[in-house]
Amino acid sequence: MREIVLDTETTGLSPQDGHRIIEIGALEMINHVSTGKTFHVYINPERPIDPDAMAVHGITDERVAGEPVFADLVDDFLNFIGDDQMVIHNAPFDMGFINAELERCGKTALPMDRAIDTLVMARKKFPGGQASLDALCRKFGIDNSHRDLHGAMIDTDLLAEVYIELLGGKQPGLTLALDNPAIDSKKNQNTVTTDISAEKSAARPARPHHASVEELAAHQAFITSMKDPLWAEYDERLKTPDDQNN
Image (cartoon, rainbow, N blue to C red):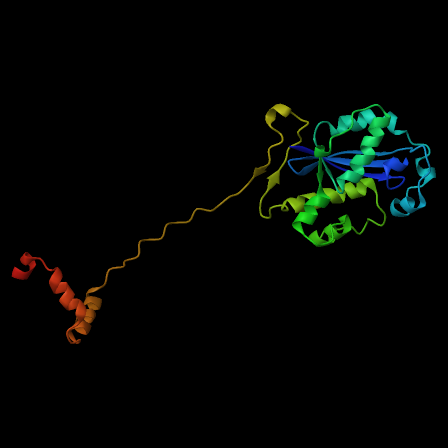
């Protein structure tokens, strides 16, 4: 199962206002394990970056002035994501910008069901709790101390860890092995295997449960000491005629 964890940085808040993408970060996961393959680009938005947006991600107009425009990168981007599911925090925001860029290039927009929204997952898992990426990192004990500013690749790396935790986390005590799927697709390289070993132990000998001769004698002495015990009368009624003649 191939998934693409993805994040973007933009010149502002809304593509409807003409804002553009200035950075894309994406990484590939197979069976919820990162393969190390990434797609990371800065993009010339062909317009100024809003000061409020610049304060969030720290990317300046000068930083992206010499970068390629989206139209020059679109084919590489589409080839990387392929037809696979994307994992995005607050998916409507990023998908809105991506589709606006695709439409400018004459490309088909991506359907929203291509995106798994981790913001929605977090709100379902922790109703009423904070669901920002920073808040989820704190909740799951993920180190985000290097995230002074937002950055597409930094946020993508953190989101991949958060996504696994939202799914239930890595199983402790199991050895998970994932081969590189690019080596040979015919060898089922995408299979995650577990290595669980157990030591065989010797069977315990059967424990005796019948009463010993001494225990039976002590019990009979106790019964004899009782006056007309009820179960003695009941035992008499259960005796067959043959038993009574013996």
